[in-house]
Amino acid sequence: MFDFDHVVDRRGSWCTQWDFVADRFGHADLLPFTISDMDFATAPCVIAELHRRVAHGVLGYSRWQHDDFLSAIAHWYQQRFAVNVSPEQIVYGPSVMYMVAQMIRHWSQPGDGVVIHTPAYDAFYKTIEGNQRKVLALPLQRHGAEWQCDMTGLARLLARDECKILLLCNPHNPTGKVWRRQELEHIAALCQRHHVQVISDEIHMDMVMDEVQHIPWSQVGSDRWALFTSASKSFNIPALTGAYGFISDQPDRLAWFQALKNADGLSSPAVLSVAAHIAAYRHGSAWLDALRRYLHDNLHHVAQRLNQAFPELNWQPPQATYLAWIDLDPLHIEPYQLQKGLIEEQKVAIMPGYTYGQHSESYIRLNVGCPRSKVDDGLTRLIAGLTRCRAARLK
Ligand SMILES: Cc1ncc(COP(=O)(O)O)c(C=O)c1O
Image (cartoon, rainbow, N blue to C red; front, side, top):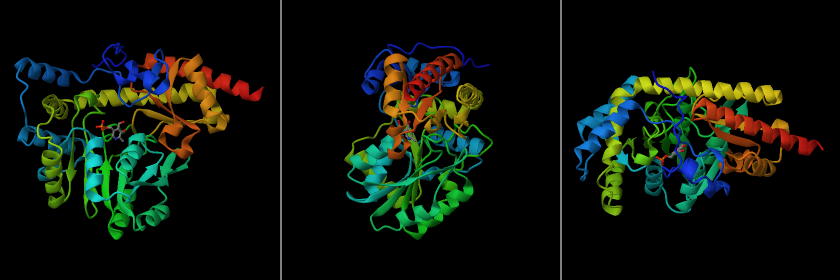
């Protein structure tokens, strides 16, 4: 019904993925598997709604606090997660990371600590440190294909005086971990005990590939929390700019509106983003499910080809996200040398693990949100790069 094999040429559309690959990788002529957006056109129902709204022609100031938007969110949460949302808790913002940053400023002071699980999405470090807060890193522990949280280590960090916030990534980028209810409840109890506020970034919530279920933080709660998300990852519309979320307590919400409307002068949402969210959440389920199946198959394709070339990797697809987080440690490859070979010889851009934290040098993050033909091309280049690198080491 939906053709995800279809290749759309994104070059010349000012896209970060292709047109600005040189910014990060130094060369412009690379096949990119980098920033987490997809090479697919968004859902037909979203495109149709955007056409309709643009055809109206008037794009004046707008609002988001209306039933069309709020009930579309409630509908999505009910349909996808069997969760009843509290519409009065809903807030809106230009992007998930903007909302995270705003909440960090609200719940902490410069010099305070924010706990994150590492490896972490690189913007987490930037936002915490860019706001003069301290990263309190808790390494996730890998047991086979599963990633686990060291609850004793977490309790120790949360107990520190300087620790004010836990910034959770649920599901987790880059490992693809889907947090289980029991783990979330344990974390909530620890945060409650130590009066640590929780910000849950759930932008990857729709991209769960396995049998496991995404559990929104609102289901486990804790004292005070904020959950931020968007349809931007799932429906590939981040450049429309628009995100939303839930803030548990009214005083925090009032402070939020004060910060956005008065301090930052942000009153009107991006109307095309609001329209896209409504269309996606009302009519986008079938497209999203077909997309998830395609991405699931992409990830299994990566596993099949990579493990065939290098059985010692025994790479397993993640529980969530279209990001393949691959540990190359068994190949004993020098990461900077590998990047040089991938960029200069294979002409491919794949995120190096060190982007996501100190102890991830042996990893790469391959974004497979693209047609299978591109995944195959990328895999061929990656396998060639790894083979050359390994041969150089063995010489
Ligand atoms: C965990 C996570 N949060 C936030 C974002 C970015 O969201 P936004 O562009 O809405 O700030 C990303 C994008 O990769 C992400 O992976």
